[in-house]
Length: 130
Image 1 (cartoon, rainbow, N blue to C red):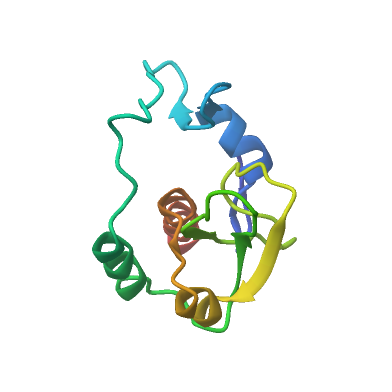
Image 2 (cartoon, rainbow, N blue to C red; image 1 turned 60 degrees about the vertical axis):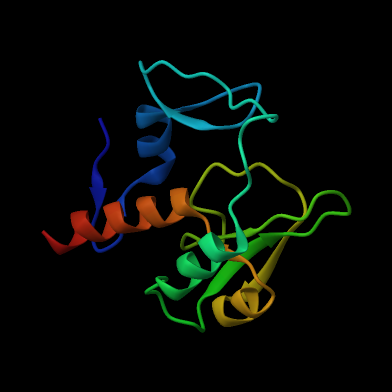
């Protein structure tokens, strides 16, 4: 069972594996014991620029905080990832080419918040504020 760490929230090294599975095919985090079907690349649209701009506008976390972005030569990533106390990503993103940026710089480069990271961060805040 996951135990909250004083003033930090749950121990994510235990909480994430206890709560989530990651699809081996597409990397989608799924809640354990739930049914999951990989998205069909032919039918799933990437978020629109308008969707990403709304996510950026609604990001309530400090502009100076460090976030992580994926720099790759292929398809450009559109999300930045929140970091933990060790500057590792909060969500189980598995990528070797993560670059640290200030949140305001990532947003200026048109990256938007990773929704999974933000859900984890809000859950941590709920645990520590109780």
